[in-house]
Length: 217
Image (cartoon, rainbow, N blue to C red; front, side, top):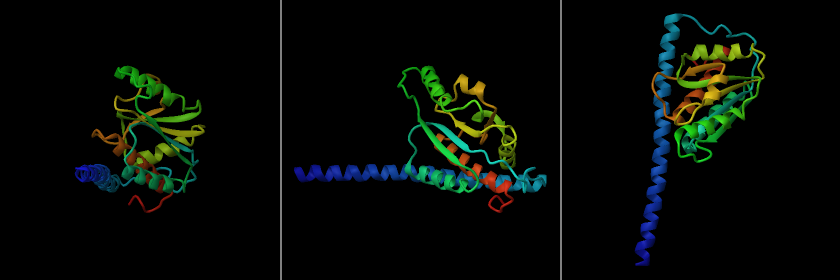
């Protein structure tokens, strides 16, 4: 009987580990599919318009970037990809990845949850930050426009560029009023972890555009 219980526990542990691996793999594969689609779309738009970024090849003030995201703990696979792109980004500017647990005070009402998350994010934002809100109702921009956003922010006198990714119920009132600009990464609704992956990839892509490098082509 003891042997059977031990085997069952082992099987359960193996199934749990397999489930976590499959979840991580699914998140990573979803990102790769979305990324390839986005890259193909950007390539077509670039060739149709014949226009590049207005800052390409020019000296751009490299503002430190802080990514503030609210949500559950990221899967291992997602975090690995995020860390990889952040290391690449650090070739161009300093980068800080700040993660806030959603519903930090365990509120039972979703409105209170949003207010608590809102306060936690606002505590991290300085008066001289240039704040970019990622929101499904934000301005729809492409990679060239994202690169120009980074270049424009460098001309504002701001000391840091903060990108804010909201929790499951979105952003709070204080942050929406504080934001300098609101953008969306896609017309589709993105899973929180996929949104982070797309953001860090696009930030790296933007800097290669600004530097006139070949990654984005």
